[in-house]
Structures are given as C-alpha cells and as structure tokens.
Length: 531
Image (cartoon, rainbow, N blue to C red; front, side):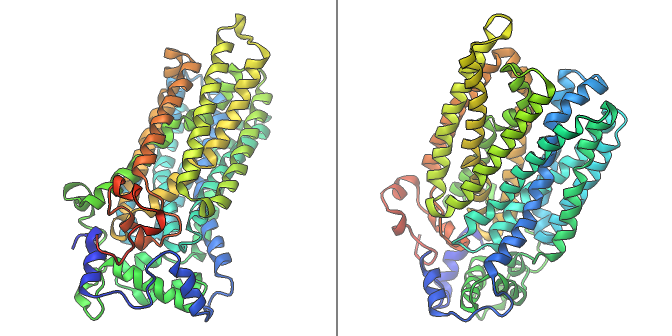
C-alpha cells in the first residue's frame, strides 16, 4: 500500500471514527465537546513547549558552532597560517559531512525512534567539539569538524521532524520554530563568546571557542531523557497504546488525544478490526525511497518538489555568506579593528534572535505563505542595497567609501538578517517537516536536510572565490536575483498548511496549483474527501 494513497484508500475501506475532525476548525469543536482534561498534563501546552525547547537545543548544538566559527576563523588563520582556500574548506566541510549524517539519519530514526536519534546526534557532535578544542594542527581541526558535521546532519533532520510530530495543529508552526530560535540563540552565544574569548592568548582563544560547543551537546544528551517518544513513530511501530499515552500528556483533553490517535492510525494504514493492516514493527521505513522517486503519485511528486525545493532555495538567499563572513563584510564596510568587528557581529545575533521570536508569534496567526513571501521581499531589497553600498565602498579611493555607503552597507546587513529570520529561516524547517505524510516523513526530511547542507556547503566554500571573481557587491546582487527566483517558486508550488493536522496536509497537495488557486483556503479538500 503506497503511503501517500493510504489515507484515501483506508477511508474508502473503513471510514474514520465519527469523532475524527474533517477540517482544521473541527479540532476546536472536539475540545469544546469533550472538556475532560488529560490526567497526566494539567498544562499540556507548557509541557509541549518545554519538550520542544529541549529538542530545540539541537539548534544550539548546530549554530553555536556556526557563530563561533565565524569569529574563530580570524584567529585560526593567524595561528595556523591558513590560506583562503583552507579557510573556505574549513567553513564548508562541516556541511559536506552533515550530508552523510542527514542521509542516514532518516532511516536510523525510523529504526530506533526520534528520541534516540536526538541523543545520537548530541553524542556525535560532542565528540567533534572535543576534537576541535584539542586540535594541535589544521589536519586535526579539520577531522574534528568532519565528526561534528555528521552530528549536525542528524540534528538538523530530527529536530523539525520531532517537533512537527508531537505538536498539535493550532500551535505547530510556533513550536516547530523553537529549534530555529535556539539556532539563533546558538549563533548569538557564539558571537558573544568570540568577543570575550578573543582576549585570551592566541593559542588558547580559538580552541576554547570551538571546544565550548561540547556544552550544549551535553545538555541535550541529558535533556532528551525527559522527552517522550513521537506518538506517530510509535503508531508506525504497531504500538498505539503507547502513542495514546503520549498524546494524553500533550493534548488539552482526552477527546482530542483520542481523535488525534484515530487520524494518525488512519494515515499509517490501520483499518479498524483488521490486524493485518497494521505496519510491521521494526520495518525501519523500507521501500520509502522507491515510493518517493521511482513510483511517485502526483500528490507525492508535488510534496517532493515543495519540500525539497524550499531547502534548495534557503541558502541561495545568501544567509550563510552573511552569517559566516560577517566579520569580512564589516571590514569591507570600513569597520577596522577586530574588537569592533566582533561587537558588530553580536548585534547581528541579537537582531536574528528578536525577529525569529517575532516569527514564532506570527506564524500560526498569519500563515506560512504571507510570512515567507514578505521575508523574501525584504531579503531582495536588503541584498540589493548591500550590494550597492559595498560596490561604492570598493570603488572608492583606498577603500574609504562615502559615509552614506558605509551606513547603507552596515544597516542592510541587519535588515537582511531580520528579513531572513522572520520568514525564510524558521518556515523552511517548519514547512518541510509538516508536508510529508507519516510513512515518508523521516526519510523525506532526511533528503531535504541533505539538499540544504549541499547548498550551505556550496555557498560557504565558494563565497570568497565568488566575491573575488565578481566583487563582493556583485556577489550580493547575484543572491538578490536568486531570492526573486525563490519567491516565484514558493508562490506557485507551496500551498498554505496553517492550522491543518499533519494527517490532512496530504490532501492540500492532491490538486495542482491551478485548482488550488481557484479555491479559497477554507474550501480545500480535507482528509476524508475523495481526491
């Protein structure tokens, strides 16, 4: 039974229980009809937030390293005598190795569970951080970054999947964005630690910066013990009773938990009274790649394009170039001293954190599409102005540009980071994790992360070469043009998912773009309608 068609065929053979909601708004009706509180959770929303914040420590694990590396490279180059090519390789190799981690993480999480995969990611990154912190030379440093990269691949895949699978529909956008706020917080921690650790002797400064990445990994390895397993993974393992116990901890009422379990079982291919319809325990997601790439249905193909395409375009916006090379950009804009450069990068980290928090407050109220498209509009404007300012500075005598150009370049770094953080940053991860059907989700998200890391590595490893070839201003003009292409893609290929339970989102993709545009969002087909 193909996973994507499972929900519709199951509905034909054995209709969903009468309590199952037929639209996003029905979830509120269910809660109104059955106000019996869950015995194990007096404050389930708070509990979910705590659990997802713990999962969001995955973000700290990943991007504390990114923030630290942006400043550490200044000291590594001086201490180890590295050239620009080695700096680019060091910046990008983490993402190349993350590719290997992400490609295996989906199958591993289908096999051992979401929670154990989070623990594995933390342990791998911990080992890499220790190795980097103790590295005596460039080769050892590169090896440690490779190990850490594998952990990053696991972390980036499992965090949004776990968050999407445990959150309820009405708050899923906000809670699946929690890992992104932790990513931003990790970058900010990295920038702040760079500023203070720069005062240490050269031989210890950058090693301490990189070695401290082990701390959030250790916190995550311990925090994972307090987290429940994904109820959707438990259902796929043929353990619905355990899934119901988890749902009753995170849902507002017993009735809502029962309804969510019924929908999950339907999406997984369960037919009431037919034990043979249950997924085979320990199947480990076999055959998923064939369903996605060899024999995809039209619905699967649309999901594939949307989920993988949004990852493809995220780093073509130039975010990795701005975050990783912020010190170089500020230096090109005329900020000369090292302490001032590092202080300015702290401002970038604060801006990123504030606007991601804003996105978390808006994503379930405004919707994914308006935030994402508005974000791209801000990115295009910011990159265009940044390119203009840097071009004027570069062509000025002795690199001392007009004051307005310096102000423009510095200001638009902040507006770019703000624009990215309010839409493209958090929504890429939330959207790509929620559109996959249950059986395909882990391995589909795994492939999405692999594409994300390829694009990330491509930008970070070629940016210096790119701006030397077409100037630093020209590089940002190029990113602005690519952001326009990204906006066109998202407008036509990515429908709204706001407020829909995961089990209904498949139906949003059952029709093409033309048919969806002729309908209002409220009239889109839902899970028990015929495709």
